[in-house]
Length: 310
Image (tube, rainbow, N blue to C red):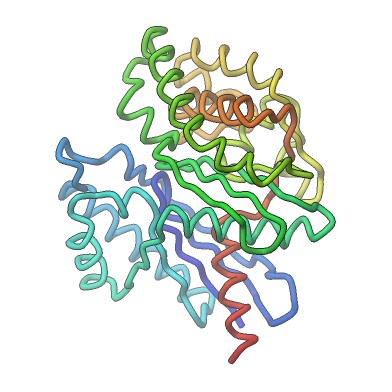
């Protein structure tokens, strides 16, 4: 059957259309993205303002048109941290449902971590052993660890690249004092959960998903996306340290010219690099692998698993 997963994230609204069957790998058929950056559209009281809600409604409606044009039989719509944490989330969800007919399922941070972990496990297989996973989104950082398809421990921290940029790094380029202050805050938050993971032992393999990690890996020498999903891509901590410093000294327009960096994400990249470096360093990870599957694929895989039980 043809499934569509509609991901209302903190940075983008992304419709992924796949041909999916029980026991088979989901095959991408169409990808439609719209930059929304909800994490940067929050009002002072934490609500999504009128303009933001109207943009969201228009964007969801446009994604529905694409889904219909491509013969999607079932739509799996969900929202993540930007909607989840908005003070007017219920009103936003009701407005979207009323005007588009789409009832967004709001995932918890732990849900995000668990579904992303499922996708990484299926992509990498059982031979990867004890798996440690990192994912930096626009609104949050997810970390998960485990031996099975469900992680033994999964946490979500409010350390997304979009959120931190909007709230803590107003300059272009950011002020050095702001970078230092944010670095301390990020490391303090991550350090609070490291012990929770260490009690399960050392991972056999460490992987990262998300646009932020993919862009950072590309900057440090990984293959471009045009070479396909099956090309191994890695990110080294020492290379990341060098590039993190470079990115913090550049203007957004300069970052947007770098290989693999999209114009819409260029402003967020210093914050993303800071979070990635802190996460790898505090967890004692020198090198990690980039996994092409993430949350959207996890949502699709969970739906296929339920089909097997029908």
